[in-house]
Image 1 (spheres, helix red, strand yellow):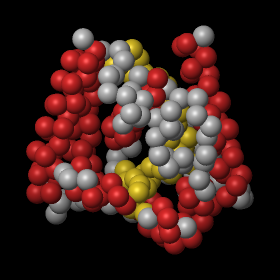
Image 2 (cartoon, one colour; image 1 turned 30 degrees about the horizontal axis):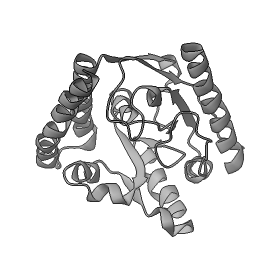
Image 3 (cartoon, one colour; image 1 turned 30 degrees about the vertical axis):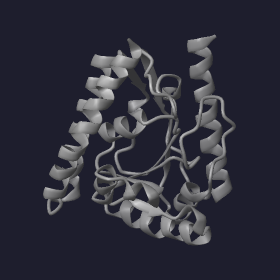
Length: 239
């Protein structure tokens, strides 16, 4: 039954992407603030369909920690789920992502319209400079900048490997960091077709003030809070 439910959800999501992409491309001349709101509507619909077919719900705590002005979001990356739910609460937002994603038909074309910061992860210092320059510009334009500091989806319990790109952006731009933890990987992990019914829990932490902090200090504080919170979520739900 779980296989059938997951198939129905994925069929809806992938069949809707070409239509959503066509709409986003047609609306490209519209200011990004308003286009982001439409993207959020699509994400909300997908999450509702996910609940309907797969019984996968979510709870979010810490909404009161969201600051009044955009900052850099450090989010744990275990699933596709968080890429949708973040769009509901941070408008407009842009992502730091690997450039290969832009080559995915329809989905990548949509990302290209979202002011994404698409980097070549093999380019080393060039990629870090791109993150710092383009990320600062996006922030100054009033966008939330989302980075998944490990660079890719990870399985629950995997050893964390936080890259310095996001922390360097925070250090050089002067913008603060908002850490976010969740346990989506327990229900919709990387590489698993069947989605498990249950309730994903996401926790939004307190803002990390980056003034007078070095890049390594920013990264360390974000990693410590995110990983400790993820561990707490796992222990409370699966002990």
